[in-house]
Length: 217
Ligand SMILES: C[S@@+](CC[C@H](N)C(=O)[O-])C[C@H]1O[C@@H](n2cnc3c(N)ncnc32)[C@H](O)[C@@H]1O
Image (cartoon, rainbow, N blue to C red):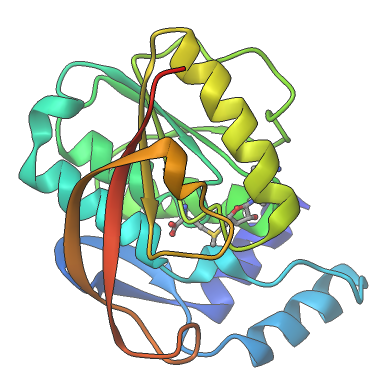
């Protein structure tokens, strides 16, 4: 699957600058549904995941902007990007001076897209292609989580895992546009950014993306 997934990503995306973080380029798509149908055909699986990896989501965009504005958060530090999609947050961390970044995702096309995107930005990201949300916290300094609160099941598991991560003394940065399942009472807003997205994904093209820390306890 790895080689064919890589070919699929290259065939179905264009390498483009990310709005608001133009020094990062990603293999991105313009439309969701045709790409989803192509993924269903490619995998022979009608339940293939939506192609989240082919878009820069608002949560990830907010984290990428925040790291560009505050490189000291990751400079010389090790980073783990949970639910990485395109790899945007991990790549932004490396561009901001992180010593090493690991990106985790469960979608085989994301797993193929992340190294391609890292390479397109002159950097490297280690990929973990499995569900880590029942694992112990990773051995890193900072965990990033961009746009994980769009669906109840993932949101609950991601929040529980991030609480464990935070309890282990690891810094946690969460990016989100105010989605339904964000545990707003458990987070502290650090910054917000006007980000440009697409109405293919969201109700408006211009949205606010928030960066949060997780409250202790
Ligand atoms: C909305 S996208 C966000 C991608 C990226 N962080 C961003 O902000 O652009 C959510 C991502 O979570 C991934 N995902 C869903 N469940 C997961 C799990 N249990 N472990 C890791 N990744 C998961 C999906 O495959 C998808 O790539």
